[in-house]
Length: 174
Image 1 (tube, rainbow, N blue to C red):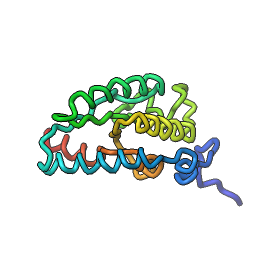
Image 2: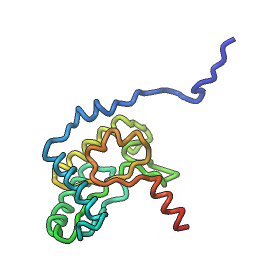
Image 3: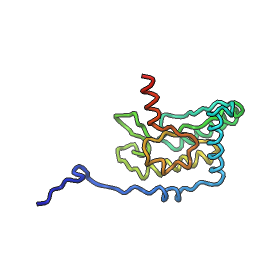
Image 4: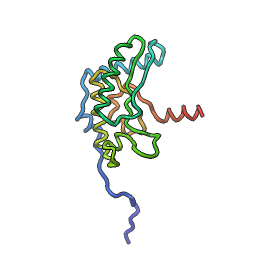
């Protein structure tokens, strides 16, 4: 007698694009790599008191529209340039919504805002947006919720928030 015991509630399955496929499709230039490497060092120096500037990570709650994100990045870049002696401004570019229990879960999970959950499209769009913002010359910060998505975009990130660390901080505050 045959008994179905595995994936009993799975309707269909789609393979996820591999990180290397996506990285090869959207490679970074030497200029972008230099920006990210340099910004990571600047952030480290600020956090360790070797640089007196203030680190500012700012941006929208979550990105859902590429055009708006790039427009925001252009404006933020000019502010970063104006205040570079006192501030290091990093654009917050979050693609997932970990604390949202109902509704849209973010661009990576649902890029079309229609519950289609096309993660391949979401990962591709996320990498493309990060690459374009970096090409503008603005460093990017994001939040990683799991060990999977960083494999697709970590080379484009200057600052990251690990959710586990945030949860520890919030539980200490409570």
